[in-house]
Every structure is written in C-alpha cells, then in structure tokens.
Length: 167
Image (cartoon, rainbow, N blue to C red; front, side, top):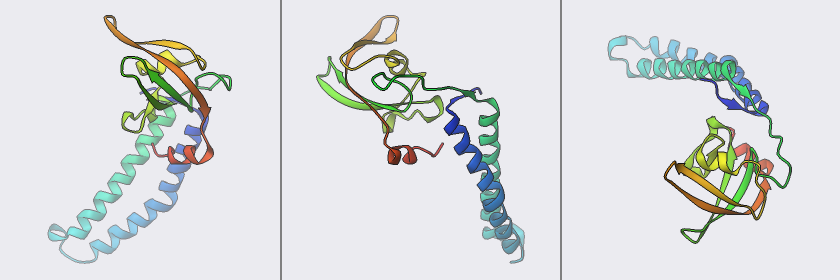
C-alpha cells in the first residue's frame, strides 16, 4: 500500500482509530444487542442494519491501521514561496486562457472533484518546488502536455486544513 502521508495525517488517523475503537465500537455493539433482543433474527432488519454498521466500523479501523502501518512519512520542506504539500496554487492555463486554483496534497487525499492534486499526479509532480511566475510544462504522456504559469502560492488556512481531515 505504502501511502505518502504527513505526520499530521498519521496523527489524525490514529485519533480516528482510537475514537472508533473506544466510542463508536461500544455504541454499535449496544445497537446490535438491542436489535438482537427484538426476536427472530432472520426477519429483523434492525439487527441486520446494526451488524452492517458494526462491520463497516471495523473495516474502517482495519483500513486506517493498515494505512498507518504502511505509510511513508513525507515532510514539506518547501519554502514559503515554493509549491509544496498543503499549499494552494493558482495556475494560468495558457491553452484554455483560464485560471484555476489547486491544493497540493499527499497521495491519499487527492480528489480532482475538489481540486486536491496529489503529489503523485502529473500536475503535482511538475509543480513541486516551483515559484510564482514560473512557466511549467505538465507532461500527460510522452507525446502530450501543456504549459501553466504559477500566478500565486499560499499556505492553507487552519479552517481549510480542518475541512480536509477526512480520509
């Protein structure tokens, strides 16, 4: 699996695992016990739903623990004026004559629908270490690509960081 994560990502995952084990697991076990007491289990929808919720929680715990165990810790060693992890970048796309904003994130957090660009993606790899005003070639494959110009770089605000905490 070997996901690149920051230490903060790992700390947040560990906190979620702890919460799921100590709080959510107990609540879901109680839900299963309560539903089981309602009688015939073969036709008991509440029991099936409670078991499913319990199993989903256990699956999430296993997933997070495996991510933590196999993670490669990356540090953002970029300067304030360079593109790096957790920086928001405003790019000018020359071919489209458009400006768009992207946030550079670790592999696990990449989500193109939210303009979260992974450091492993072509655009993420190409932008790392560049500064405002740089014209960067984004290679799609050996035969295609496009140029972008970096218009601005800013660090994420604390409220932006909290919105991204879900893995």
